[in-house]
Length: 106
Picture 1 (tube, helix red, strand yellow):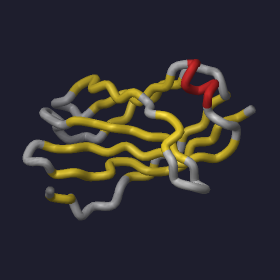
Picture 2: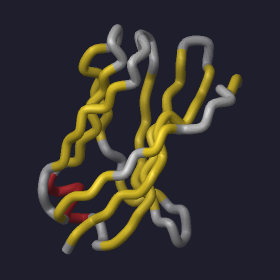
Picture 3: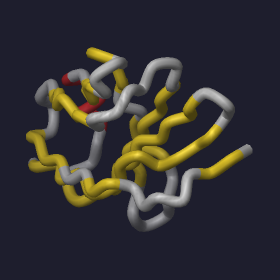
């Protein structure tokens, strides 16, 4: 397993609990052949609370969409949580692409 030496880019999101959420992220590099995973986790104990969907919008241009359904957002506790998005590039190189905070209101 190879690991890229770069630091993850910051990602800070906020939404109202129970609302659908979606945001387009632009990496500005080709991500053809990459696979993705995302998690919202507790800053207290580190456990995963939700797994947002990652959809590739334009792999050649490096555009992905991060989304949560209203049911997923309703299941999150109000407050500050962590969020991270990871990729696995061809050749099994793994990297945290984004990491930051997720503010859930109400």
